Image 1 (cartoon, rainbow, N blue to C red):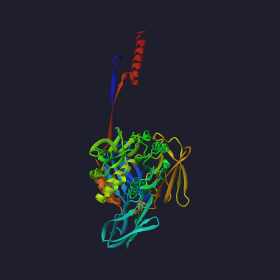
Image 2 (cartoon, rainbow, N blue to C red):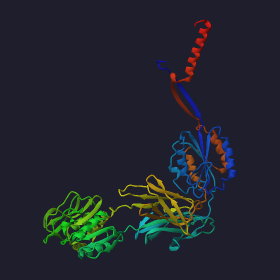
Image 3 (tube, rainbow, N blue to C red):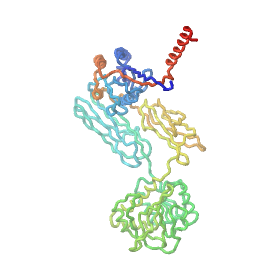
Image 4 (cartoon, one colour):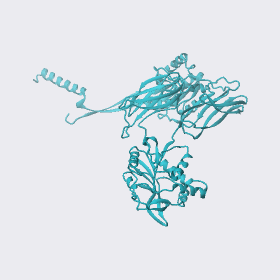
Length: 629
C-alpha cells in the first residue's frame, strides 16, 4: 500500500446511431400529414428502432417537439432543420436524417447553403402535387428598406406565369387605398418571368405600405398569390439650419441661396442681432458674431448644448470675446483690414475635395480679414491658409475644429458672396463654393448627439403568425445603456385595437415580443418611468398576405438536391416503404462505440479492502483453530 498500487480499467459502451425525422406540418401540406398518415409513419418507423434511436419532430416556421402544438402553419423554413441538426445535443451520433415535406420554402435561408457538420445520410419523402397549373403570381417585391424624403427610388415586382396560352396581364401599384401607377403586358405561353419596375418619390416622411396586384388570367384558380405588399420608410433626415447674423450682409444671402437649392436642408433665418433658442435647429450658420457680451454667451450655450456651427467672421466681430469657444484665439478688434487670398493646404485629409474644386478656390477673389497675427494650433484642420499678395502665411483662413466631440467650421473673413459670383461668372456653375459649404455642413451634421431614448421594431412588416419584436434603448448622461427604470409599451392599431404591456429587461436594453395581432397598421409607444416621463414611438404593419398561399405547387427539386448532396435517396409518398427498407440496409449507419479508461488507486477501491478484511478474518480463524493464539 505504501507503493500506491493502482488498477487500469477500460470501459466500452455501444450506442445505436440516431435517426432524426422531421415531418412538415405547414398549411401547404398539412392536409396530407393527417392522423392517418402519421399513424402509418409511426408503424413504419417501428421497424427501424432495432437499428436506430428514432427522434421525431414536426416543423413549419420552426422546429417543434413531438408534444408541442404547432402554431406557425402559414410559413415553412427548411433552413431551421439544418440548424437543428447541427445543434443537436449529441450530433456525433446522428447518422441519418429523414425529411418528409413538399419542399416549399417561404421563410428563412435555403438549407442548401447550410452544411451539416455530422455529414449524415439524408433521405427525403416528397409530398404535395408537382403538376403545373395555370397561374400568374407575384413571386417577390423589392424596395429599399428606407429612403430619404424627396429622393427618388424604385419598387420592383417579380412576376411569374405558367400558362398553356399567351396571357395578357395588368399590374397595379397601390399606396394604401390610392392607385398610383399601372403597367400592362403579355406573357407568352409556357413558363415566363418578368421584372416590373415602378419609379417612386418619397413625398412625406413615415412608413409607406405599397400593394402590388396583378390581374388574373383565364383558367387560374389560385388568386391568393396575385398580390403582395412591401413597406419602406421615408426618412426625414433634413437638417434644420438657422442663419444667425450680427447685421445684414450679402454673405448671408449667398449662403441662403445655396442652401435653398438643397432638399436635405430646412432653412430659417433669425432677425439681425437676435439669438434663437439653441434647441431650435440642428446646425447654426453664424455671421459676424459676437458683437457684445450677450451674443458671446449665446455662442457658449451652443457649445454646451452640443450644437455645431459654421462661423463666418466679419470686420465688426469682437474677436476678443471668442477666447472661451473651441475656435482658438483671434486678433483683437481693429479698424484696419487687409485683403487675403485663399491658398489650399496640401495633404488635407479631413474631408475629400475634388482637385478641380480646390483649383477654382485658389483663383477666387480675396476676403476682407482683420489685420493682425492669427494664431493656429495643432487641433485646427486647416483647409485654406491666408495668402497676402504673393506671400504665403501660416495663418488659417478656412478650418475645421473638433473639441470634445463638438464640431465647428470657421471662415476668418467676409466676402463669401464674391466667391460665388466669381465662380459662376467664370464657369457657369458654383461647384467649388457649393462643395465648400455642403461638405462643411455634412461634417457638422455627423456630430449630433444620439437620441437618449429610442424604440425600434425588428421589421417594418410582419405576417399574421409572426411575433412582432420591439426593442427600446435608453442612454444615460454618459452615453451608456441602462434599463433599471421600468418601461411600458402601448400598442395602438386599427378599429380601436389597444394593448398595454410591460417591456422586459434584456441585457442592457428593453425587449418585448408579442403575437396574435390582427392585420393593419400599428403604432407602438414606449414610456420610460423617469421624472419627467420619456416616450419614443415607432410604426409597423401586419400584412394580410399568407406565405403558404403564394405557392402551392410542390418543389421536389430542392429535396432531390438536398438528399443527393448527403448520399441519401429521394422518394415520393407512395414509395415510402421502399425508402425505409433502403435506410434499414445502410451499412454506413453503424453503432457508436464509446471507450473510457479509468485509473483507480487500490487504496480507493472498496472491493480491495473487502479482500483484506476477508484475509485477516481467515487468518484469525485458522490461528484460533490451530492454536496460534
